[in-house]
Length: 140
Ligand code: RTP
Ligand code: MG
Image (cartoon, rainbow, N blue to C red; front, side, top):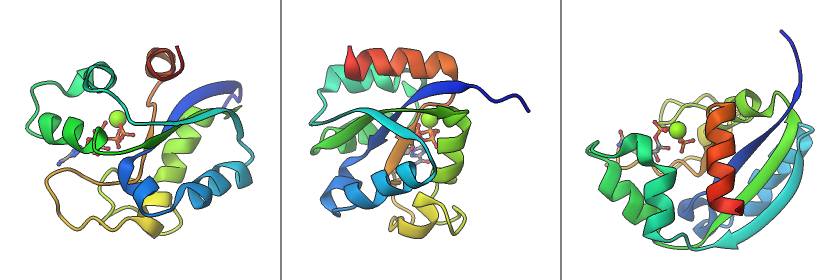
């Protein structure tokens, strides 16, 4: 596998902020060796979220997801590191925290048992193209 420096967008979703897990989650990112290159807290607008989640428009969880993400402050981070896009998603674990592996953020800290929207603490970009697009939305 070839290694190269990448950047990704990480979001700590409203459930992570409300549960006071910001420090814990950022610490896991830093301990892995990734660098937090930019960081802010904000309550996202609906317009931002519709762009961020455009690939999910029309799916049954889209509206509840946007409502959940707009329900309170989130932390947005530009994170850089060696193969960080895939690496952070591996650190985060599977989308559904009930089946995410122990050792992952969602597996260790997830407390969402079968709700309509997965309150799964974090978001991470899933490709270089998504990372570029999402970083433009959250960091301009
Ligand atoms: P993310 O985009 O947040 O990093 O998570 P992901 O790639 O693992 O999941 P994705 O399929 O992109 O879905 C985005 C977010 O929508 C919520 N979701 N709920 N009820 C459901 O079945 C369902 N599916 C997805 C989750 O909050 C998920 O992270
Ligand atoms: Mg996704």
